[in-house]
Amino acid sequence: MDLRPLLAQLSDGLFHSGERLGSDLGLSRAAVWKQVEKLKAMGVEVHSVTGKGYRLPSALNLLCLEEIQRSLGADSPQWQQSLCVLFSVDSTNTEVVRRMRHGTDRYIVVADHQSVGRGRRGRAWVSPLGANIYMSIGWSFQSGIAALEGLSLVVAVLVVRALGHCGFHGITLKWPNDVLVDGRKLAGILLEVSGDVGGPCRVVIGIGINVRMPGAAAQQIDQPYTDLAANFGSKIDRNMIAAAMILELTRGLEEFERSGFSTFHSQWDDLDTYKGRMVELRAATTVTQGVVQGVDQSGGLILDTGDGVKVMAGGELHTTLRPVTGAAPHDS
Ligand code: BTN
Image (cartoon, rainbow, N blue to C red):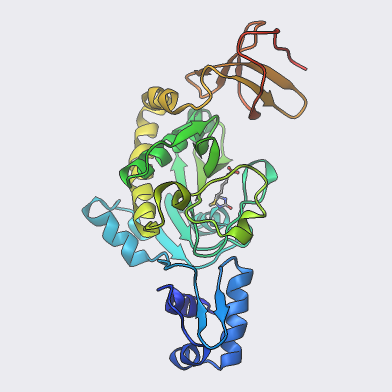
């Protein structure tokens, strides 16, 4: 069932009668109703009013390859033929892996909907249709997995840069790569690496940006979240954001290949929400408390535990109510 034509008809945010939609799309009214129900199941808010028909709560611009290419303009990366825009996919990360099987070095997939969006730590990434941006970029590195230190932090900086180019400011970061506005998650990044420790490897970088999260979908989110519409107003062009992301990621990953995390370090520091704050880092079997001093050259989190300074490579950061000066923090 191809739902894109129906959603495109509804995308002006105005009322459309079932009868008119049916005749425009060559469908019976019952088939239109069935497709509307399917759109709802994929996370689209569709209002239906007797005598008036169906409409979306506001206008929507679907993701579109030509629009993204137009926004890319002359700056378009040479390998942009390896860019595809999908209406719906299981996960853009998985799709990039599928498309890179045949030996492509770089590939980008952008989608309007994910049926099995993945987050970090085995979480699901709530991915309703037509509301947000789900994109993945596959990138082959020649220098081995060790040279990827700091990459996930670099990607977070690149997301903030791209959003800044689109006029969205005041965005900060939480180690290792959560993108926040006022402490609430605006975007998430998932890196999946495969390959050799010393030889070539492939990284799939998945980025989810909340643009206009519908209320029903939001109920499935289990952490404080926000979206661009709530912070910057509702006139948001997702195609323009996707293009800005593609450009910034392309330039930034090339810069990372040349010089690693070092050239991004100071910008990361400037964006760090938690610097100087008492936090708790929860790993599989340990909880470490300390004051955030920043990150080191490899992107590790530097914590002053009161019992010495430690560099932490993994774990999930939480704020604590404990004041910065006070009882000695501890490992447990
Ligand atoms: C996180 O948990 O913070 C990471 C979320 C990453 C979500 C993105 S959406 C595009 C790509 N495809 C996925 O299945 N996940 C990533």
